[in-house]
Image 1 (cartoon, rainbow, N blue to C red):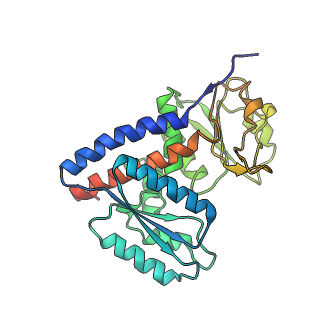
Image 2 (cartoon, one colour):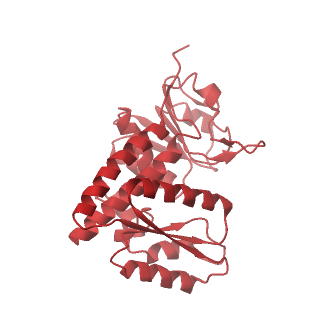
Amino acid sequence: MGKMAVVINGKELAKKTREKLKIECEELKNRGIYPQLAVIMVGDNPASKVYLKNKNKACQEVGVQYIEYLLSKETTQQELTTLIQKLNQDPLIHGILLQSPIPDQLDINQAFRAIDYRKDVDGFHPMNVGRLVLGQNTFISCTPYGVMRMFEEYGIDLCGKNVVILGRSNIVGKPLSQCCLNKNATVTICHSKTRNIEEITKTADVLISAIGKAHFVTKNMVKEGAVVIDVGINRNEEGKITGDVDYEEVKEVASYITPVPGGVGPMTIAMLLRNVLKAATYLAKGEE
């Protein structure tokens, strides 16, 4: 048996990131730029409320002004678009974030398209997705961005490595595959229609799970010495938060592993703040 995996401490890294951002935020304020994030929540999703609380707290810690727009679940597409356009035109707002999920009568992609791509701190606007694919300067969606920061911080070089990603969502799987490709990794994406998943995951030097199935990734799916990143957030029968990876088992074979909670989650919010400061900086310069 090899030695136990190094635990990638997302909580610590996020704290370190926020401390850096606080200094950057002060510097912006000294130049007369006061970073502001507007968050829109439609309906009454309890999980979303928790996320908003965490985002608000992180904003306060760094010095970013946080404004919340809570819309009723009966909101129409037109009302949502009108609010987004108002925020687009407000020069004091640097970042606009639409908290998902939103009620079924609304088209989330249409809403994302309505957000000014220069204020799209979640990186979901087609313009920013396209820029990521082209390897241009853009907003990278916060969870993939957080994962990439972890690789950087822990000195995990992706060049020439086999990266296997479980899940192809627009929020994590797809942008993350592009980020890894931009670092010269060889990327395979597995999803619900993939055959022989275990054979594929066993080839991974870096295995990233973002499918939302508790303890889906077991020890027999992981190659000895692989880096395992768990993006999943699931609740088990006891209501405890747990990842996609069977952590206790897998940490015996992996070289690096992220815990849930305390892994990727805190990094997502730290990267959101990084994107807000980036937006504030670029908007102040009048850059496209």
